[in-house]
Image (tube, rainbow, N blue to C red; front, side):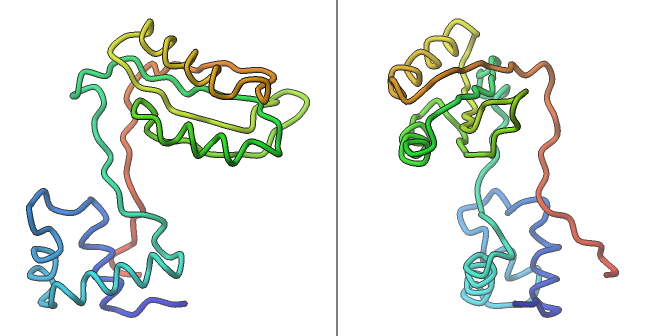
Length: 161
């Protein structure tokens, strides 16, 4: 699937995010002189075809008081990793959870879950909850704590391309 000039304009208009508004798609439509339904339809089509992976919010955890943030990493048996990962991803203290290939022998972990809390003690309690959920399917785990905020951005298109 390819994108046309209107899709490109839509991607450029939304690359920094949707407007914080009760009607964000209507606002984007007004910017581009389109109908709201067309904006929604085009975004859905691009998402269904894989051009857009997802439309989601990216909260500033620090501003929400969640200043202890740790990427927990888990060595989970392959036959259970997907099912257990879905359960972990549904926990309210996990912002994202995903599977990745191991890089043996140095990196045995295949399941990653970002845990957020007001302090490390709370994050460690959450980590224990995940460990209990994984049970005997988990062979090893660790956690990597954030030391600084990295700016998160989505895809960027060159305006002239």
